[in-house]
Image 1 (spheres, rainbow, N blue to C red):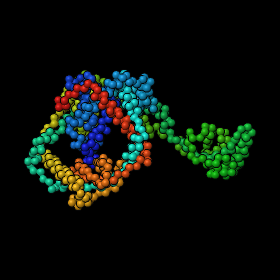
Image 2 (cartoon, one colour; image 1 turned 180 degrees about the vertical axis):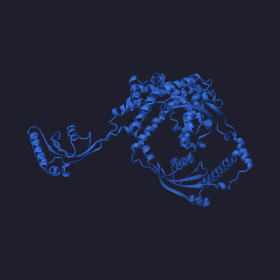
Image 3 (tube, rainbow, N blue to C red; image 1 turned 30 degrees about the vertical axis):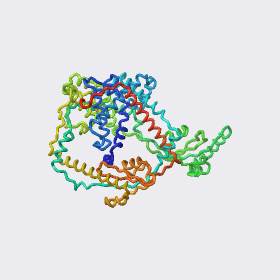
Image 4 (tube, helix red, strand yellow; image 1 turned 90 degrees about the vertical axis):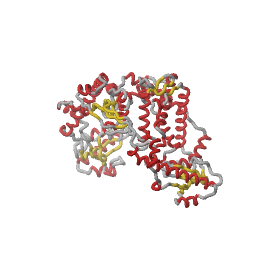
Length: 626
């Protein structure tokens, strides 16, 4: 499926995807882009610098999302590296302009709202409740002080406040809704013909290969690669140095015996005699007492329940209530039931429903797991808790050592008795083992690590893993010899020729169709079948997106069918025939209308960002100089 997406992404569709995945980069964490210190900045917005590091990090994140979307490779139709970097820079400029605007307009998040937001964040909770110690330790691991974190929360919250305010004001009017419904429900009758070239018949000689290789040498380069040294501190390594006293483990077992006790389930039957007020209560008690005596004298509980019980749900089944666990019945009934022994008959029990007789038939569950079977689990649990308490202090200590002796990881590793490990070679957008982590690759190619050759800051990878890295080796991008890429260049030339031939044949066919040639004649000439889709809907999912989008962008035919050509990324050329358009605004899809309002809100928000960035005094550094 991903291959199909790549094949069909061209033109405005590609730019549409770019827009979708870049709206906006993040409201959370915008402040992380604001750090600077480099002599060279990518741009300034009303005097505030966008650092080169911020651009590099945002660009890496953007490429990563694009790559994941298309299964590991970005289609050529998205443009060159410089085009993508320019898009990323423009997005950052918009975000800076927005942040400055909300500051000037005094958007703010109040103390009560900030407190409520932080206290409901799961990362700061233990057992479902906000935990101050967890809050402090998590912030330390992320490199925040409480004040710094709360300031960023206020900034991000105020930006979200602005965004919500714009989007919430979007609306439609009846005439637009009617027009939208008509277009949304519209169906179109289309047929298609696809021309393709047999690439096996296309040749590429050595001179063509040499010419393309020389003209686009930058495309045939090895990727820039690095190796890094790293020190990893994780929960498992900390746990290995922790010894747990067996007495503490047993004490934990005693404290949590309920956790290791299986649910007790009781099977029982009952007889109910309903009671109102006054004399009715005494009469019901007298009646239930008589029934109890008959049971004691040997009569069948089930038979008497069927005859006398006033519980319509169980009387027909001899009073059988099935399996019951604690918390299901009313308190007085449950207390009496769980005090009985198997086959024991209760005394009359009063509830809000009346008087009951209860008979217990069986007891299942309620066993306590022996200490030996949960000892290892408890020991690991205690070790985890102790290790979690230690790891944040160790990370802080390691960070200080890595910073104070920034030209080597060895002193920090030796002091904390941690090994310095070395990764394999990896690229900016791909790696294995430790380099499979995006955060590691971003840090490795940052200016601090790559150019300044400093130790990185703490890189939190999740699951209580924290890593510090420094550059071991760097391999710049190198031109690949022609002999190594000859077949790649040959394939590209053949694809280009096939695309050109398909395009030429398609344009010629369009001219002939406009001059009276029939679709059937063209199908016979091309020796391909006509694909008749019939009337299609706008949201039909069994048709390729490129064909569907083009079909619904074609003008409505007047008297005769109209034709349009569609070059595909695969090199084929498809001609669409649109012969009829049917509109229907009778059924208004409320969900679709809600989607329209949301889309209008998003569009208005993006327009606001564009307006703010256009008003700002922006100075951009030429990308070729960055």
